[in-house]
Length: 322
Ligand code: FO1
Image (cartoon, rainbow, N blue to C red; front, side, top):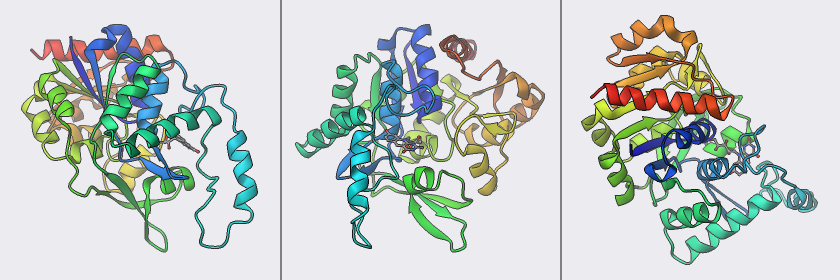
């Protein structure tokens, strides 16, 4: 069964690790959020693409969920010397965003290839090949597309996504999210995956800042809605809380209900089924009232086997939807 997965970072990567135990990796395409991308030290960094690549390669740091396992940090330590002499107002030598020594090689390669004129889609495929990842990894767009977060303050201010997420450890209240998209478009490869996959899974990623950007690209919601019976979403909210990251707080701060019912309201236009954890079984009626079928199954992915069972439940939901 060919499967397309709308993916953010850690939650999606763990889901994909299980999916490739349930179907051959060559039948899987991941459409990955690039709205978290940033430039540090002049290097093009694509955190969600890297998290998915490293996880599928078995090289991710399992504790952090990002970056490489057994990483060393000598370049970051060496940068500290320059951070001390940097004049006021200079952004040289940022040390708040941690780039491991071996991880740097990925950013060197991506940056150099983009400068040579390669597209992000091409470079992502090359990086995946280097890591022997057989899943097709597609950035959601080859164009510049950035999430901008409005902090509630005071004072209220807009900051780039990584300033909020890493710089402020996503611990400050948010009053808005917008996308700086410059007319970005999907690629032909993304469109082919959305139109052709036998099943489409919305991974358990943040619905606002991970799945939201993919859905904001022109045509994506329309393509998903047209195939709604083949689309299944996994709730990233379990028992009213996000398993990782700020999804629950963000939903509340932006006026949504941080529960599987709130997730159902967001996804009902594009997905026929919502998969929720057993702790949320009592909210199945609310999910159905929002217009989605509800599948209740353990969804916390502690082991690869948990992830495989969750992936299987998603594929079964699509098969039984006809
Ligand atoms: N997340 C952090 O919490 N702190 C970091 O210093 C950090 C550095 C980093 C470097 C490369 C990379 O690919 C990812 C990195 N992340 C870091 C993770 C990442 O920024 C976020 O998890 C995602 O953007 C949210 O999906």
